Image (cartoon, rainbow, N blue to C red; front, side, top):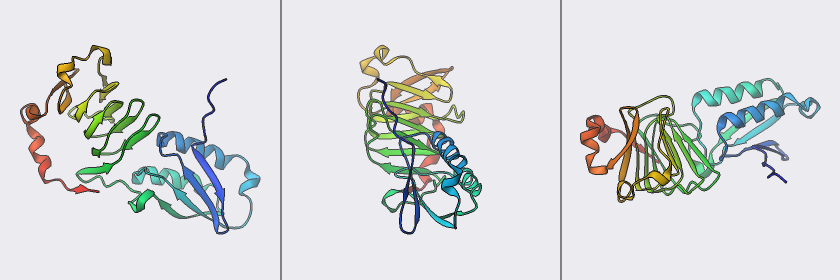
Length: 225
């Protein structure tokens, strides 16, 4: 018997209104599709007086464009009034696209961490974990899962980690060779992966300024927790 996938959107009623819990481990595009389905169906569930809505994103942060898409879905139900959108631990629910965003935690098997811009992750990416970013990815920890940098086609993006033992690396549209073909000497110590001649190469971190001479410009970027 196949594994039953838990809902990406869980709706709970409270004395003050409705609570929408969005699964942080799913791609946000999949969350929006499920939300659209639920809002367009079971129409009798949504009929009634004005109802306040609280949206909980978990550890996810979203862009203004993603927020706009989500609000447009809710606008189809005039009686559902969004009261708040919240991320966990009191952090802003909107992504700050300025500079490098710093996040702390472990990306576990089955979880997907999506980000716009450059990402500095203080923690590990376990096997089965997935980190995706439109910019570069820096992991101060072990990268043993999948990492996709330059997700919107940025071929200058890099992927760096204190311990680089990925199941797969992807930069822009280029995918790394299988993990069983990695040379152990390539992934010992702190390394980074980058694109050269249409292929993903790996080098020691101290070589980054030689291979990416523009990297010095990042020193002035703000780090935001």
